[in-house]
Length: 327
Image: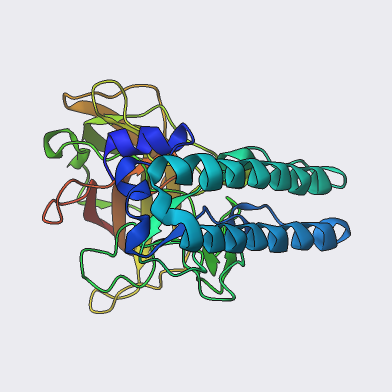
């Protein structure tokens, strides 16, 4: 979808390409709501479920009218079907927010899920707000994955509960990946100075040099900021984020370490610096308490701790690793 199409949809109107395609078997595709909700308190669940069911009914009714009258053209579809549907959804979404707000913090931004669009050849159940139970994955036929057999593009068909911004597994993250910079502006970093060996509990330094990383965004994971924010670029097209440094002891150099083990040292660097030119940061490691081989790694993160995306698949992400012998 082009930037112009995105702007048109945000303004509440379907594109001409979408609206004029109704005769080709289009259906209404709406943003999923269930996966965007916070945990629903028990006291509000019945009312929320009723309104989620109403959202599906509204889509079904719009699809029936589209099938019967869609041949009347794009302007008719927008004025008589998509526009009224958005108004109904907005009122229903407001009732959901009020129901939750009576017993917990009221969710914000649900009205942004009101506007629907047309999807040529879509599954009628797409965007039916059922949290994935009935199979609508909200791909909506807008993009079929370029014929690659894409299995999912959002959490609509996932059996996992929605991610809530905290560091818990077995969740499905619905936050959009966000902005991707040009290849020449993608983040890069390198450990440019480190000791080959240290004594146990001996403090040492790592010099990390970053490039194309603005170190000004760090949503605290302990406060629910993990995977919560889409990736953002600054005015020069550079990723806004931070970088992590961690050192862990390797039990073997022949087998990969256990991924769940907590490292002996970890720090995130968000110092408001960084830019398009190489920029040095000194990391102070207070010492490692165990003898053996330490693996010290650095990797870039966007505001919500994801490794920044690259323009191409054959670019190396912003990560570096060294090994240090601890005697």
